[in-house]
Length: 280
Picture: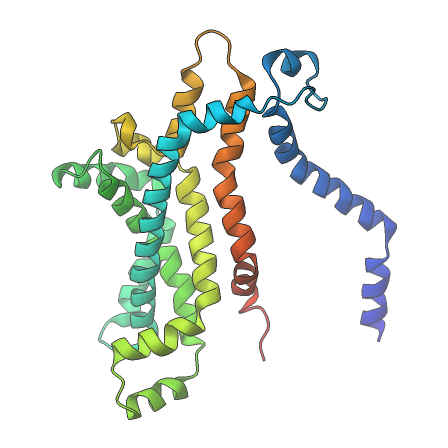
């Protein structure tokens, strides 16, 4: 009872509400400012920096979209196949570590976890040399392979814990009915971990979509550039004065796919984050 009363007092604390409102303001204002600036021309940008656009310049979005469309398509292709490969390979590996028995399983898993302690920057040179020797530089497949390798350890660690939490009785009953391990993985294990798969997909997509360094190292052909590289190339295309309206419109267009995807998968993402927080 006392704990409940304390929670109620905390929820009705005006100081806490003010602090939360301030935090929400500083969280969302940069996004609002980006959208607001995307409808301005340079004259409004310099004369009325904090004011709303007047008049609204819709042409900024047409200019930005026509310039970054090829890069947006490249990022969509790379992100889709990277996420698909990450979910497939890491879920198979996690199921193997969680459900199968073989000699040295725990030792191998410890080696996988040890990869989490290696900074990603230290892996760039070995990965670049490997792709160079395989003649995969300046290709979609080379960029995708880098993301597949970089996301394995953390994703396997997360997904394995969810596979281990599944009741063993389900798999024993499936084996009695004649299911092999592949069928048990596809028909029983995967449907039960959809929330965490969605969480891993969103977290991986955020890193892949916003990554600048790895595509810069692997690709040299502008036709293969991702959206992060494309935005920098678009900014450098302005001769003399930077046109901030179209540039900020490009930022908005770049963020829209992530915002739409998160809104569609928000429930799955939250469910995946909180799945292991409460024990029955």
